[in-house]
Image (cartoon, rainbow, N blue to C red; front, top):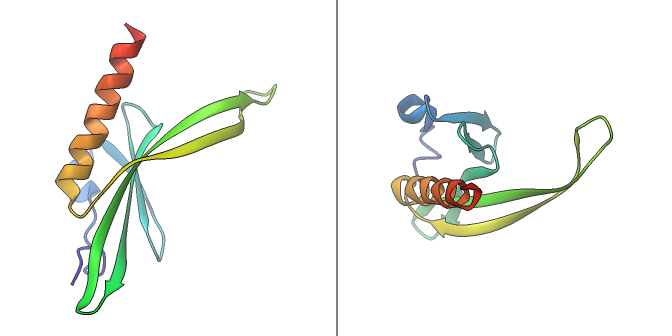
Length: 103
């Protein structure tokens, strides 16, 4: 049985680094350091039950409204993993790479 079906929540272990939004079919975790990087946790059905799926994504804002809110953005999948730590470290690496681009 997958962690998702067991009710596992990453913020119980990584709460100081992530914000969480839970829905029936998936959980989305955004990094506090850079909310443009997120991990979506869901489960897919296989013959023997369910398996975890962790998708690391990057959201790029393309246009803002005059009020400052996002008018248009594009989300791209960075990579997909079957375990949390690989997805987490991929997200951390993405943030580090974005920070290096700003220097």
